[in-house]
Image (tube, rainbow, N blue to C red; front, side, top):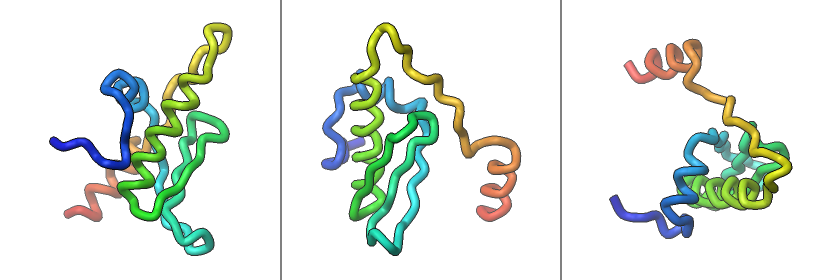
Length: 95
């Protein structure tokens, strides 16, 4: 699998980022894909394409995690769209 040009993170950084969910939605007002990371307060970014937004979202998560000190542990990832209701809806639509 080739690396996205929108993501410049190391494999170690990507491993730390992957557990955090991102919500990516198109914003008519901003004319961009907006990214919110529910588990990291204030972690938001955007991109012109969904792929660019996802790459920037991963970079934003990595930046926030890097800024956390030893005195302040990183918030545990808790948000998921893969709960039973979300999974049922996704599989129903995909059927």
